[in-house]
Length: 482
Image 1 (cartoon, rainbow, N blue to C red):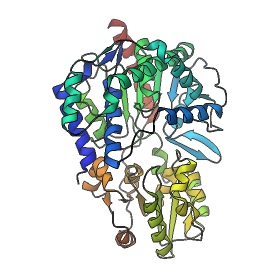
Image 2: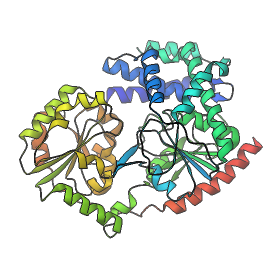
Image 3: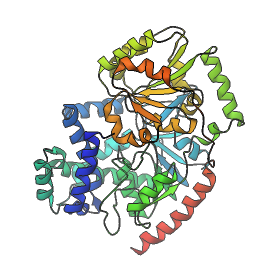
Image 4: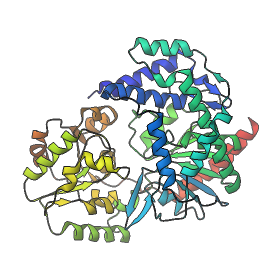
């Protein structure tokens, strides 16, 4: 299963990193290629789907709107650890927001400082609003402009153009603006670090939002920055494999990558040097209790699920919505749900990052009513609490498919593009692509009942956190001697 878009991107960046000195693109002490490579992905994606960059003015309006609706930032306080969320990997449970991957760690790290972008409230724990900080950084960005050092820039961009990839984000002007915002954000977050004095700074989605700036601010202070895995990797993720790394690592990449499984850790350690970058198999922070049928909390969630289900069903199917995909596809899915066997229950789960515009995209799905449809409980129960009872997951190309594997629940993708990042799931028999929606219901009907595989060793989060603490001490020494 090959996806031209995804495979093409991975092939392109591997060749660029082998042929050109992009790993030495810098602005001061900030390495630019990690961010430029992610921007190149967006360039290629827009070309693939036929859309254009929304433009700086549209982005500015969104940022200003978010700032206007965001409560004033809480003051940073001394803390042993800091966790920066991405504002997307979150859930609203019983009316309270929490970070899916950060909350289980913060529960074991008393007094940790929690930062999140966006205007969601209330949070399960005291939370520092990030948007005012990043807005201040954008205002300061012109003061942090510096000379760009871009060896082989012309040759690299000429190569990409020859491959039919214009890559507007890699032009010197956009790179200079990107570098200014990055360095200004690192300065602002550095002030937070100076006040909090954490020994470790965790983040999710290092390549989105302020993740790279946090890594840079931590590197300057000898603080270990840790990216907590938030999505499937399978050795094919755009942000977790590098063909060329500087001798002292990338200052804008996390120093440590906390992975869900050994295979992902081995993949990262295959390119990481073990000093400036390394991987730790810490396990899925949220999953452990839900694989234990005797866990009291899990049994309570099972009761909640049965109450929401309202009785038995022939099949329970989770529809994981995303913020992409044409409205026509979601409308067609609504048609198939209405025509499906009446004994099937469809749990339609909104993406936590969904906006009002996204809701309009799949309005017909969200308007479905009747005894076969569950919408509100699909978003108010933790994802693992749902997966324990599902017979299948249906999505455009959602990482929920990977989180369903430990429960033995198969996934059906409605987009051929899912084959790129999730081809390894299909190869292992955990997922398949169904682009002909007329085949969706027959395919679901033919699926065998899920059989949960034997639980592997449960993640010991406390032990992994202790290991991170040991690595943090070594990292401080490494930075001090550099």
